[in-house]
Amino acid sequence: MTAEDIIGILRQFRFRYASENELQAGIAEALEGNDISFSREVRINEHDRLDFLIGDIALETKIDGSAAALLRQVHRYAQSETVQSIIVVTDKARHRLPAVLNGKPVYVHSLLMEAL
Image (cartoon, rainbow, N blue to C red; front, side, top):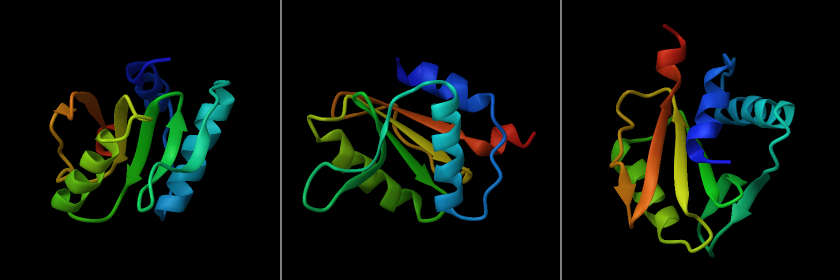
């Protein structure tokens, strides 16, 4: 399973949510419905916890916060040996990230595109 495969699956869904927790529940349902194994709330160090870990792919949901804070967070994730690529699922146009951090690919799946 690649990050592109996961994003392809997520594109098939229209998520209804009022909070990040509700979005995460919808993503979990989408992954489970496609028989994709994952872990939730995975601690990768003393301070950082991944929303989802799918093999060696981190999936982070982000509907609040600044672009700078998100970049710092994803950069920390990219420093982990556990993580080989990162997907950020967001509904904020300001949440743009470099395509690669610490040599690891970073993907942004925009829920804004789903609403069109």
